[in-house]
Image (cartoon, rainbow, N blue to C red; front, top):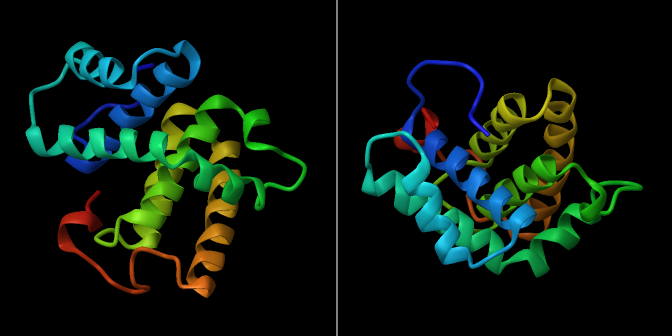
Length: 163
């Protein structure tokens, strides 16, 4: 599933795209996650970048390992929609972003949400982007209120603002 659009994308965005593609392969095709990650990176036409690939691998493994926490959060913020009933790509984008909100203190929540919206625009639809924005903003507010948000509100990192 190649991304729409051309041009140079920041490395962390590339990593998120790669993670989404690997998670899609895992979700739809099943199989061993480590094998999927290794194969997925090898099949993608791009130059090798160890930092990007490490970040993508960390996202994939983090999402896969934390579904028991991520999916109930998504379910509690998608009225009348269980995560398994969402479109596969939309569900995976939500999972990636929720994982980052929970575990990546280096990336501000606004950046995480914006990146998820961009993934939806690239791999899903404009309508999905709006849906994902609403769900993630509600999850962010609840995590912030509960003190469970990984990133401090208003924190910023120059490396991530270009993500």
